[in-house]
Structure formats: C-alpha cells, structure tokens
Amino acid sequence: MHQFLDLHLPLLHYIPRTKENHFFYRNGLSKLIPRLTVKVHSDLEKCEELWEEFSPHKSLFDLWEFRMAWHSGYGFTPFFYTIYERQKPLGMLPLWFSPYRKKYLWFGSDWMEDNSFFVKEEKLIDLLYQIAPNNMLLNCITVPERWKHKKLYSSFIQDDAKNIKDISRVSTMDDLLQTFEKKDRYNLRSDYNRIDDMNPRVVITKRKSLKKLNMMIKMNIKRFSKDPTDESDLVDADRRLTYEYMVRNAKSYQVRFIETYIQQHLAAIDFIITYKDTYYTMKGGNDINRFKGIGNFMVYTEFEDAIEDGYSTVDCLQMDNGWKHRFFDQRQVYSLEK
Image (tube, rainbow, N blue to C red; front, side):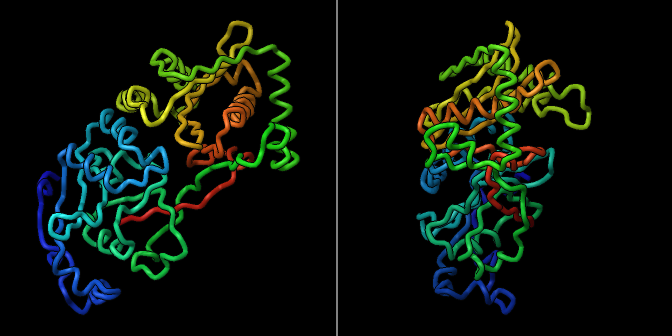
C-alpha cells in the first residue's frame, strides 16, 4: 500500500479528457481540471494541517483530537487524497488503510460518523470520488437532496441510521416523555421507578478519569461475555487503547462518566462525550442480570442529565441494537463503496 505515499500527479492522469469522462468536464470544470494536481499525504503533521483547514468542526467526529484517538489506538497509515490548484488545496478525502478489513476507510475507521467530503466547492465531490482508491468503503454520509445531480448519487446505499433526539424544546423529563409512544413511555418510566425504588446512588463525574474508563470497559466486557454471538468490541486491545486516548485527548470536547450504585454494587457505568450542544452516549456496561431495568434507568438518567445541563441534542450513534428507535429519531445516512 505504501506505493501511494507522496504521490503527486496531474488530475488529468485520473480523469483524461475522453468521451467516457465527459461528465466531469461540465459545470465549469473543463478549464479548471487541467490546472489541478493530486497529492496523497501520509505525514501526520501535514494531514492535521489539511484537516484543520477543511473540517467544519460541527460534530465530535469533525475533531482532529478525536480522530487521533483512533490513530493512536490502531496506528494505521493515513492517505489524504488532496486536489490542488497550484499550492492551494481545494478538496481532500481523509482516508486510512485498514490491513484487517483490507479496505480504505475514513481516517479513524468506519466507526466514524457525521462524515462529509472536504471541498471548497461541492462541484469537486465527484472529482474526489473519481481519484479515490479502489477497495474503499465510506460510511455514515449525509446526502442532501441537492446532490441528485452528482454522478455518484446513484451509488449511495442506505447505511444504519443515526439515532438522535432533539431536546432543545423540552425543559423537563415529563416534557420529553410526552414525545415518546405510549408503550415506550410507560416502559421507560416503569423501569426507572423500579430501580429508583431500590434507592440507587448516581454519581456523575465531569472530568477525565482513566480509572472510571477501565471500570466501564471491564463491565462492558463482562456484560457481553455470556453471549459469544455479541462479544464486546472492547476485548480488542487496540480498541481499549483507542478509548483511553479518547479520554486523554479531550480538550475541545469533554468527557463524563455516570455510575449507578445499588446496595454498594456497581449496577451500571456509562461513558459520555459532550461537544458544543450535543451529548454523545458513547459506551457503557451494566449488570442487567442482577438489576432488571437498569438499561432504561440509565437512558432516563442521561436524558435528564442532558436536559439539566442545557444540551440541544442527544446523539446515541448508529446501530439500533433493537431498542434505540423507541427513544430516538432515526436519521438516514448513506455509505459509498468503490
């Protein structure tokens, strides 16, 4: 794979002016394309410089320090495919190559969400896709209606939906509960009351703590250890190291841990990240065998925590896992393969 390092070629090398490539020379690009070059960067310092120039910094996943947690955990080589006009970068596709998946993925792996094409102008998106390497998977892309004219539009396929909840218009849990279906509202409140009757002690720690992270990791692994078909991803040492760097790297974003104790027993512990007005529920572990309903109790507690701290959105990430649709709105996103 390292033959791509420091590659620097004219864009015409990728998109020669032929009948088959006529599409790319429309929309004012016919005069621009001959002036463009492509360079593939793997130097982390240069990659960071490009990232900071293009990233919108709207989401947790837009942050270099968060993506670097994954690089620190896995160490895969970045391949930032960048289109230049002279020395000015106009568009960039931030990838890495996973030797495990044997695919090019977003820099940070296919765990990344809220992904976008980094371009100065949207008309360059088709060009970025054209120069991208084969054997590539790009996941969790928001595809606006205005992209229907793009060449690659028909290539998008539905990905697992994102699970988000707008809480900007609610001020109490009672307000939020009214937004759920009657059955889901009843079950959530019922499980919360069941655990609440046990006089739980909830501890919220709004700071970095590797000790609490390790508590969460151990409980998460134990939670899924009895089901070999649904093993925790945290059994992987690289993934555990990645989570450690998520905590260590927290600067633009903040981390917190929510623990629930019942009769001196740790019943559950969840890892949360907050950035701007969004509350991300990242990972957790619980003793569901001993404390029935503890999962819904934690969902309730985290919604309550997010409301009290004035966040506008709770982001429960992709993958429904059989329950998220009950309490979150599902936003369709797409993936793209080559």
